[in-house]
Image 1 (tube, rainbow, N blue to C red):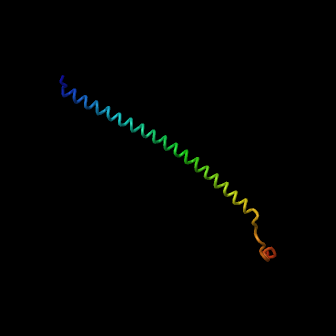
Image 2: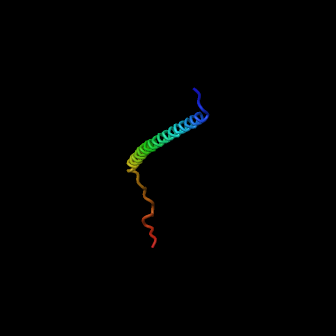
Image 3: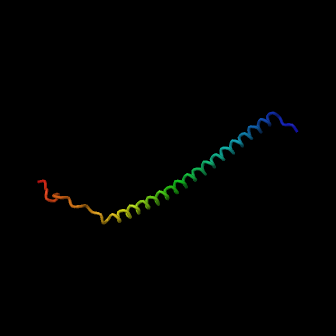
Length: 84
């Protein structure tokens, strides 16, 4: 059960091509999976950032509401001075 040199060379080349195709297919699968994970991460970060922005806005309104009673004191002679 011998193999001729020509058949052996053909099998080696055929196996190398199959191995290379497997590696390329695996790389493409990993890249697609990575792209999907990055897209999900960007979506999650956008949601978290939006919620944080809303919390900051609510906090700003809460602070402004508490400062509503604060006003400016009268400035002496400010209303009497007019520039023509």
